[in-house]
Image (tube, rainbow, N blue to C red):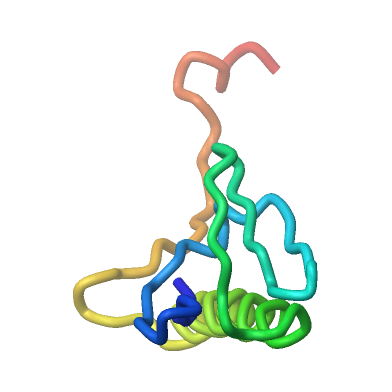
Length: 91
């Protein structure tokens, strides 16, 4: 989620995964995949930077979760598998 500002000055939070495109006309217009449009005070490149930072934080959080397992999310480990009992005598 990214924080953007309406032209009136009020901030709002937008799910960046729903952005279809950005236009600069000269105001920045955010068009969502459902066709809804928002005119925001931030510049085009500033919105792009916000989306990049947000997505980067998601990737980093995932990498941190993989690197440091916690008690609530035990990691599974691979183990050796013995042959199937019904196939032992067929070889």
